[in-house]
Amino acid sequence: MKREQPGVWITGASSGIGKSAAIEFAKTGAKVFASARRVSELDRLNQELDSEKLSVEIFPCNVASQSNVDQTVKKISAISTIDCLINNAGITSFKLAEDNSINEINDIINTNLLGSIYTIKSVLPQMIANGGGTIINILSVVTKKTFTKSSVYSASKMGLLGYTNSLREEVRKYNIKVINIIPGATSTSIWSKEIRNQFESRMLASEDIARVLVWSYLQKSNMVSEEIIVRPIEGDL
Image 1: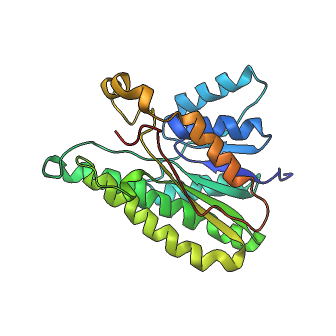
Image 2 (image 1 turned 60 degrees about the horizontal axis):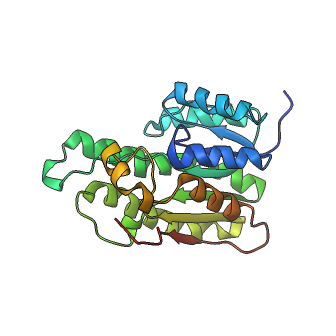
């Protein structure tokens, strides 16, 4: 089978920042591999792109499952190398620490932290072998500021920040760029409809975050924007 051009693998691509990123990268002509648990939403993404004569390759994946991640990367790698990984899949609960169930805690940590580590581990060997690559992680301003009702989410994102900061130092010698995008409140389905209806005018648009991702990836010199913080002009909610 003929191998296609190197591509961009985006997790959590069925909605929000991930979906917007898939669309923006497709517009650049990049080969986009879109993953999420909700296959129907990934199909809908391609329906939206069809009007612009664009498309993405769909690879359903639950990043919280290491075996599922490994299987997905194996399928993608059969047709293309992965030049860029965008770790976007994430969930939260917006509950006080005392109210979080153990199941909720496990789901958030397994998806946001372990899921991102699984995807990174799965693409590192080929990036090292290929002499370079880009890993972009969608973090959050919870890594810079304390918020209530975000204890587990904060733990997951701060854990990923620590992991990727250390990773960056280890993989510089392989020409692998590790970029952490740290957005403030963004209007996505992670927030309730009530919150979005009340504060949407103050929130960032996922399309704007997506353009930051494309810009940071397309830096092809020896420069790398290691950490980018973006907030609404009016500040945090």
